[in-house]
Image (tube, rainbow, N blue to C red):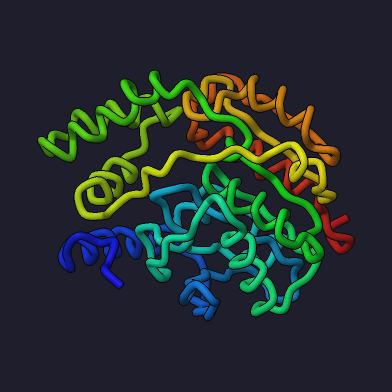
Length: 292
């Protein structure tokens, strides 16, 4: 299989940044390498193994250390499993799965079975939300509840606006390597500037074959059949998946929508304070008996 990394040097640069971010977190962790039908999956596990399990899933063109940084306090109450999504610029296999079938759902269920965990909570951002919803569609028996932040797969934004404000700056950077175009891309997508994202995405845009397949949306029948409680966080100013539009559709199609929150002044990627708010809600909803 041809690598999704364009060059060995480019792969090394991206994975060096991955390691740098993980080092910065200053946490105790272990790597778990899990075989699946779709290739080897890299998982970073942290927190006491006796704690209840939570799986966190990063967005597209991301990696597990970014997910761990987004919700740094979960490991106090949970055994956290941060998954490197397949075919993304990280340490998992480069097998590209279809978003049109149930591959993502089958893959995550295989990971859950390999980890031998049950009553799993899942939290995911952006594309990670699609992965989680696909997991619920395929088999939700071992999932206790899920938290979705600005998830893909419920609604899509205006494609023309996204083209001009997000994809053209990305392509201009790939053509010119001028950082101003990465900054322009980030200013549309990120609520607050993120220095690591500038460095990481600059390398990803240049050295990784990204997936530009149009994002599907879940159909009503599949959404209606999901029994797992869903908590949804939507960004008020999210260009990719507009918050108000998302909440409106989610209320119509999900029977078990436990809670929705429109995050004010949030673009697609939440800032630190907004992520803290999400994290606090996850922790508050899952206070352990020995903490009370």
